[in-house]
Image 1 (cartoon, rainbow, N blue to C red):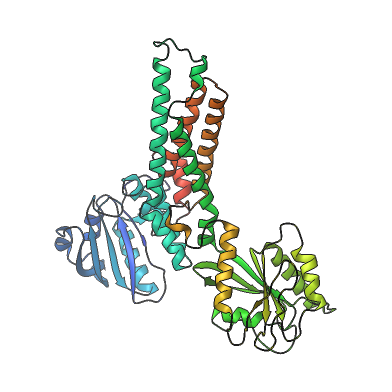
Image 2 (image 1 turned 120 degrees about the horizontal axis):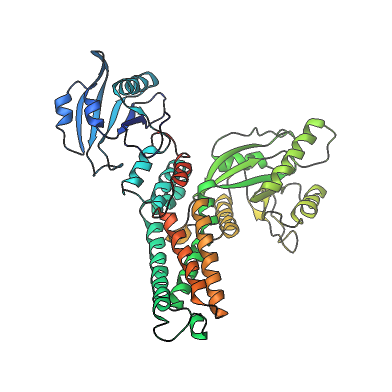
Length: 468
């Protein structure tokens, strides 16, 4: 039978990548895990007698043969990440050593952990709620320090605290509504009376709705830090696109020459701009050409421009504005829904920019050769992206939602509360309003995991990496 989430069998997995390194970690957890591990450990009595949160030195063995010298970090239930007995085995780094230790554990009776199974067990044993569980993988996937900080806020419980606070408001309002329904007949008020349409504790529902809308609005900002944004550098050949690309990346990735058309296809790399992960793309120069390779490169560049979150368009200050530049602004920037553009006047050390290019664009002076104007440019990029995705560059230090699952459930709660207030405005009976308040409570409970199903949990945790 294939293993499934929810059992307590002893499990093990590589917790560090299989690669050359100083150390590697194999993680284990589950019922009788320490007793099973003792079967392949050179000092079984010492291991079995070790207190939680202590380290034991010894060897992993198999068939009487020493496999590797290790340090075993012992964890005892319930004071462990998973809430179960378990151990982290620190062996020598390298593929062969880590594989050999893992093979010895399999031989002793451990099975391979499913993706995210350690965190799943932490959730099932009450060590983490679902928002904190999801933040674990957000930290693993964080591309910048700011992205890590946003995920750590959720891991520290900021989102759980906010969701719990909103839910308590709704529980109080729901309780008042149900009491009114239970006792209204005794007081001589029927569900169809005018007074029955007045929602008890309405201010609590309105406050909950406002806080949920703020959380929903935080989603795009949080995804900016988690997923990053696409910034495309565009301009005529030899305007300085590749030089700017290398300067922002702080390494020579694009070939820079005085020959126009050197870049014939776009290349990309990740870079941190004011803490925001940015996928920076250097594109082929935009100009008339009969060269089929250049034309194909420019077609691909224009496709990338349409997908961009922000465009950095460079004008060669030494040559000034050309017809190709004006064509770009007339044909590409003027389209409805076009991404925001930051206009850059390169080689400003050789030629000063004009006060403005058009009514909508004032050039930003830079020198891709000397680095002049780059700090101001990175701040402007961050400001434009923050405005496009909502919220300030630092996220305001408030709780934010980090996953599509959380956003969907908050939207569901918002819709239910909005409908409840609308029914109250129309003085509809409370027995129609109460189920909507209950739906809002259940949606919030599903975010933290108080309300969940095995199917939902399996789907969520299967997206984690093995070893987490």
